Length: 270
Ligand SMILES: [Zn+2]
Image (cartoon, rainbow, N blue to C red; front, side, top):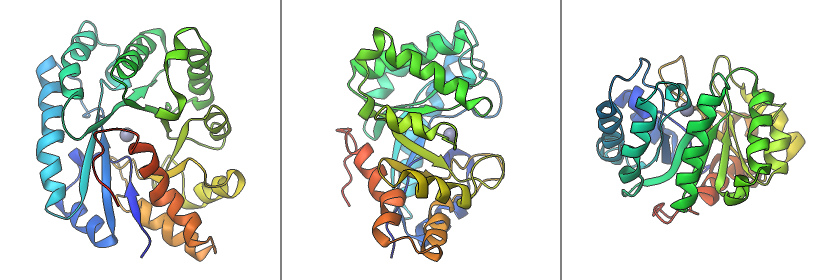
């Protein structure tokens, strides 16, 4: 059976039936980044309750289905413009970063792509660097090449030298961004999602062109019409398209494992 790792899924928004289906499909381990809950936050307390819920409740909910669960903590790009709330939440966030199961700061990045978002983005990159933690970065839904260009400017700036590129995962890559992500030495996530993101065919074409090194598939499943079985779906489509087992498992398991095991708190071993 193909080994399966889901490195980006928002189980907070999913039912227990999804855990059931994911475990039967053979998904062994998942990483859940912090996301936008679907409505604006009104206080720091709602961030804290959410982070606590992911670290404790979701870890035990996953465990009941034999799935290992790890967490990335952040103030999400979509929450970055509300002041002073975003800055206060970032302060409150620091103590959650030291908890068991918290393997990265994320998702970080841009939504609308502006200076307020960037301030919260780089402040959290600095926190990650100080704590020697991994980062997961979200490319914006619209105008991804512009998001990539701004990430490039940050990495090439004076402060950018503080960030270890091998410890950064860039998620939601498309045909226009994958080359830069890999060229910078970062890891690349491909979101296979029924609408608005990549189809299995587009993901496979990217893999055909760029190879399997440092590329990983995820579902990014959330409140939207998404598919928590995107990783096994891509494994099946790759098998049909005659990729080797080794190539399939690089993108459905081992690359995600290699990335996250850089964190001392990623305690699980295959
Ligand atoms: Zn996400």
